[in-house]
Length: 420
Image (cartoon, rainbow, N blue to C red; front, side, top):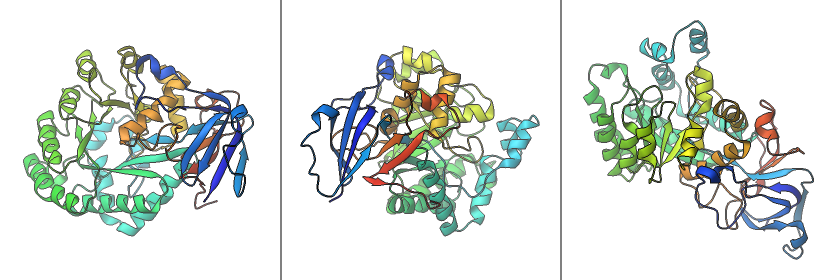
């Protein structure tokens, strides 16, 4: 039985037995911090925590690993609830196209973007795709990511989508990270269905979904509801089909335009609505009274130079919000969640504590793993990160580009990447 005691913690963030599943409105700026704290771990679970003066007798000292966290903060690991981390190749050439003046949509219309990634994925074998993705997500753990959602969507064919989802299933078995799989066959229309959209939707419903269900390959279903991609009506059809296989929606909406996708997603019982770079009062009204998590992807806004989500407006409406990386080769080629908090503070006017709530507790909810991740609570997974000695938690977003995490513990064990 492995036992670990972390003592003299400067601040233990996101701690408690009565925390809500997510924070919203004014709660977003509550840190639930215990100062001068200890944390006790047994095997892969948190078994106790509290003030240092109360720690005596908590642990049997035999075979106990003790970590002195003097001057350091301890937090639950980041949960990244929206990524496309399985892909075949990066897309630097499109980066240069945008610098020269083309928009993301213009690049997509000339065969770049999602279709570019789909073409390259068809050429890569499953084993290589798996090995590359495993190394990629484990590199993210060095920056504090302990749970990650990964979407398909670069397959855009029956075999391509199945290949991606099988890779994600292998990642679940091979990695100590908590991983959720989302089926995103409706990411774009393949070239061969450019003039036959209904034909591709029929392919998703009649061929992809039954096979995905038979192999238990997905936890969620997604759709890119956006102009030049999928309409609200098409999304409705796809989400209804997914519901027959118990696939809960987590959908892309409002990246470039407002089409009514938020209200439709809420009506379908979506777990989260993601992107939301464009948002109006009707969207906010649709979210109020629901348990749908609005999820902003500021790394995408930064990289594409598109608007940032209206975080202050959402918080003022007493709503929750989550922040995820959208890690992908085309529009957000970074999964560094610390950098994400920096962007959210500087470009979305969020406080450091709001960003840390939005990347731990609230993203755990957006992944459907609130019962095991996202906070320091007895019985939850011992997925935690220990900072370097820092003056306050504000140092994490303040020092953008710097890795402020010294130690990552996943399932009660020190995590090391392949390269270390």
